[in-house]
Amino acid sequence: MARNAEKAMTMLARWYDLQRKEAGKGIKERRPFLATECDNLQEAEKWRQQIIREVAKKVAQIQNAGLGEFRIRDLNDEINKLLREKRHWEDRIKELGGPDYGKIGPKMLDHEGKEVPGNRGYKYFGAAKDLPGVRELFEQEPPAPPRKTRGELYKDVDADYYGYRDEDDGVLVPLEQEIEKEAIARALDEWERKKEAGELGTEQEQEEENIYAVTKEQEDSDDDMETDQTEEGNQPFVAHVPVPSQKEVEEMLVQRKKMELLEKYASETLIQQRLITGQVTFKVFMATKKMIDVNNKASLLALGRRM
Image (cartoon, rainbow, N blue to C red; front, side):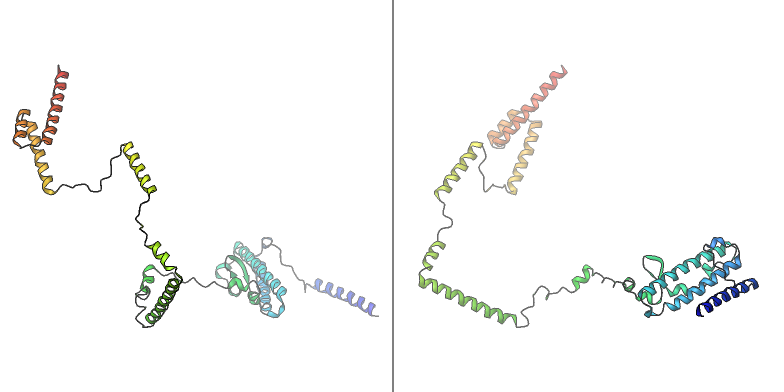
């Protein structure tokens, strides 16, 4: 009986659907897969409203955190898919001459979702924002502390920073004195112990040795070095070079000026007479004589070239 009743119900259901289709009632149209397949503005408006109702229904469902992680992820994917389809229908409505919902349409459903920085387009709604792996994406890193400038760093640097006033509190000095006394006592004990053991005499003798004593090997090496220097023709090092005084420099300049004038206007005989009287030094005389010889040679060469 149950089987026959089920068959009867199935036949009845089919007949009932057929009657409704003939009467034009209950005919459920399917939304076109692509928005470009619709050429009627009113139908495009209808499909857009249908998508908005579906999105609102799913947004209300996804607020329940007890649905489970997988169901929440599926609902979030479906909502993003419907929002993307809604934008396609809005573009189609604009192409058919309808209003531009991208500018004037309500953005309430879009504002419900939250985008991940750097992942434009995909949004998380309701409980999907608290899913593991998603919560960390929305956590913003704390801003780095601002770096101090050199001037700000130097504001905190004072005498205490360099330890100039460490002894003002009266705590450090007694501690240092106590440690200093202990170190002196240990040094005295060590000295007395070595003195009793007889080790102190040998150490003092070693310390009192002449550190400036020169051995025979060092003398031989120094002699060899001096011989090498004289063989190479190097000038011996002079520790002190006599520096002329201001008066001596002035006298030398005056003598040089005199010799320049004599070289121009006087003969060699006159210069020799001045040398005898002591008005001109022998060194200056020789320098002037050399200059006169050079000038005479230059004059003879120039005359020979002209001839």
